Each structure stands twice: as structure tokens, then as C-alpha cells.
Amino acid sequence: QRKPSLEYLNRMGATGGKVPLGLKRKGLRVVVTGGAGFVGSHLVDRLMARGDTVIVVDNFFTGRKENVMHHFGNPNFELIRHDVVEPILLEVDQIYHLACPASPVHYKFNPTNVVGTLNMLGLAKRVGARFLLTSTSEVYGDPLQHPQVETYWGNVNPIGVRSCYDEGKRTAETLAMDYHRGANVEVRIARIFNTYGPRMCIDDGRVVSNFVAQALRKEPLTVYGDGKQTRSFQFVSDLVEGLMRLMEGEHVGPFNLGNPGEFTMLELAKVVQETIDPNASIEFRPNTEDDPHKRKPDITKAKELLGWEPKVSLRQGLPLMVKDFRQRVFGDQKEGSS
Ligand code: NAD
Ligand code: UDP
Ligand code: UDP
Image (cartoon, rainbow, N blue to C red; front, top):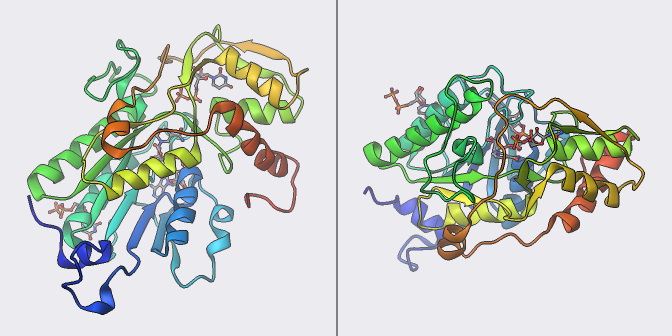
């Protein structure tokens, strides 16, 4: 395996002082693709707070400038409007690759996962940067193993309506591992389970954002199918902590990053009712095609090797998201600023 560059080690403070003093423990130069999005913008906040120089590359397909506006004017922050499907030249130490249309409403036709990931891996190879891929629990498809362990290969329909996302991420993982093995790129792979929190897209059709917006607008909560399908919901700050530990650690992964607390959609609706409006009604709708029946991460590996586990329960996290959604749904001046 190719050794990390001296400059990289130097910036990580790993060379025991045998390097020119000027470079020691200087902040890293980090690219966050998709950094104007929901997860990306929270990650950017943490990196900026740590003193890194952060370059956000985003085409604003689902992201919003409002999510990162509070860093405008900071010389350590740069925002580039760019589609990662096109090549780009940058000089950086780390690449967090999040750019991807992530909700069913948006991912129907998009080559971002494959072509965008290839370009970012090419960039990582050229400059010797460490590359982290945000993959997804969807690589397990409609899982036949429960909970899902990283060694499970999944049960994915290759030609269904969700396939471009599931298979796109599976291909992205393959590309990352090929660049790792073939070109010695230092890669990290996170498999992210359903995540919620402030700055989520309000109308992108995901269940937590739908329920919260519906309850606030006094509309019925739309439960698809019989509502007995399960998901495990992770608060965004827990995810960001996991992503940073993975990037800084020595293990390639893949690692499941998710909260093992499992809820049926009817249970989730109940928690939303308790949090926002006990009188919110429920309306059943037909379910979408190929909807996974259950999903829950086994996070033993992340616990052991990254020393990471989620800290925020659904009942603690939901009110933090509601505050932000209330401001945005009702057009408060402080949009996106929580
Ligand atoms: P998001 O839609 O808020 O963020 C994605 C960002 O990528 C947006 O800012 C969007 O404008 C940008 N983008 C999309 N296509 C692009 C392109 N071609 N070029 C440049 N920028 C582009 O979604 P998110 O929830 O923050 O997801 C971030 C990452 O985490 C994604 O890779 C997603 O697949 C992964 N993930 C998220 C979840 C979740 O529950 N939120 C679960 C599993 C995986
Ligand atoms: N690439 C990029 N920025 C770089 C280096 C590469 O966008 O700094 C893109 C490049 O245009 C190509 C992809 O990454 O489309 C893969 O690059 P690589 O060098 O691995 O493959 P090659 O160009 O040799 O096929
Ligand atoms: N869902 C629902 N009502 C909604 C939106 C989604 O009951 O308004 C269900 C959906 O059918 C799925 C689950 O909630 O079973 C999670 O959907 P989401 O799109 O949030 O995430 P994913 O399916 O990608 O895990």
C-alpha cells in the first residue's frame, strides 16, 4: 500500500515533529461534495469549527446556499457551483463525497453515483487525498438478514424503480474498492441508515420530513402501505461524528452508521403526534414499489473499530428538527439557520 504523503501526515500531526514547523497541525484542506445539502452542511460546520479549510462542491440540485451561508466571508470557506459528473481539478487532503440525489423524488434519473464518484476517485488518486464515500443501507435492498451486518451482500432488484440509487451506490462502492486496491487510494466507506435533522429537504418525500411538515401544516400524516414496515432513524449529529471518526481512522470499512432503534412507520407517526400535535390524523396510501420491509443496522463493527455509537434517540432528536421545520414551513426570517 502506498504511504500517505509527508504533507498529509504532517497535517495530521503524525510525524512526531520531524517536519518543517510551519506545516505542523495546520488545518486540513477538505472537499465536501454535496456540502450544501442536509448532511453535508452539518459536516461542513464541524470541519470549519475544527479549523480546516473547506471547499464545498455542489450543483444545488437538492442543496441550498442557505445551509452554508453562515460561512460566507470566512477565508477558510469556499463554495463552488459544480456538477461532479464533470471533472474538476483541486488540491486537497481529504474528500468527503456526499454529492448525490438521495431521495426517491430526485434520484430517478441521474448518473451522479457512478460518474461523479469516478471523478472524485480520479481526483483523490492524482493528489493523494483520502476519499470517503457516503454509501447507504439501500445496498442491502429488501434484506433477507436482520439486522444487517456489513458482511451481508444484500437483496437488490437490479431493474426496479429504486435501482439507479441502490445499484448506483453499490457500483460506487465497487469503484472505491478498485481504486483502493488498484491505485492505492486511501478510501473509507460508510453505509448510512435513515438520517433526519434540521435542514432536511422539506418536500423530498422522505418519511420523517413528510410527517413533520404534515403535522405542522395540520395535514394528515401519510402512511404508505400498512405502516408495519420498519426503519431505524439516526439524528444527523451522530452521523457526522461517525463520518469524521471513519475518515480519521485507519479502517476502510464498509461501516454501518445508523441508530439501531427500530420503529414501524405507525410508531413513527405516533412519536410525531406526541411531539407536534396529538390530534394529527393518519391517512393510509398505497406503498411504493420494492419498498424494503425492514431495516436496522448492526453497528458492532463501528463500535469496536471506531469507538462510535449514536447518542441521540428519536424522541430527543425530533424536537430539534421540528424547531427548524417550524421556521421554514411558516416562512420565518431565520430559514435554515439552526
Ligand atoms: P441532500 O440531497 O440534502 O444532499 C445531497 C447534496 O448533493 C445536495 O446539496 C445536492 O445539491 C448535491 N448534489 C446532487 N447531485 C450533485 C452533482 N451531480 N454534483 C454536485 N452536487 C450534487 O441529501 P443528504 O441526505 O444530505 O445525503 C448526503 C449523502 O448521504 C448522499 O450521498 C446520500 O446518498 C447519503 N445518504 C443519506 C441518507 C439519509 O438518510 N439522509 C441515508 C443514506 C445515505
Ligand atoms: N479526474 C478529475 N480530477 C482530477 C483527476 C481526475 O475530475 O484531478 C477525473 C478524470 O477526468 C476522469 C476520472 O476522474 O474522468 C478518473 O480519473 P483517472 O485518472 O482514474 O482515470 P483516467 O483518466 O486515467 O481514465
Ligand atoms: N413512507 C411513508 N409515508 C411517507 C413517506 C414514506 O409511510 O409519507 C414510508 C416508505 O414507504 C418507507 C419508509 O416510510 O417504507 C421510509 O421511506 P423513506 O423514503 O423515508 O426512506 P427509505 O425508503 O429510503 O428508507
